[in-house]
Length: 90
Image 1: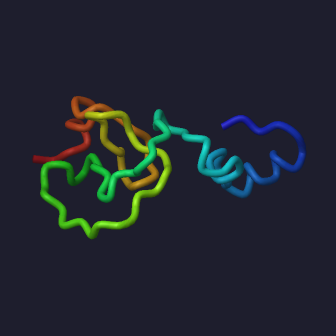
Image 2: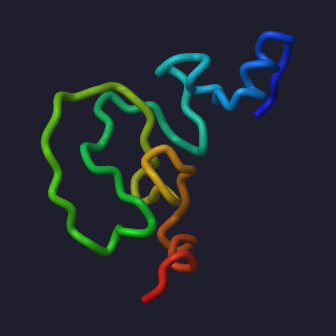
């Protein structure tokens, strides 16, 4: 993440990401802005298992491109399924 200006640099040091600073119209980690974020985004560690998801209202936000997964958690970076295999113990 790049930090420019003193106030932005301080926020960066405190751990704020660009997405937090710029609001919901800015995506990071290879994400794409979508009209409806997935109810249960696929995460590398659990993409082989079916998840029970509770439907929620459609919200604009950031999501991984089709066929990609989150690395570790809902806000982690997006990786391909092929890359994901190295993180899974079978």
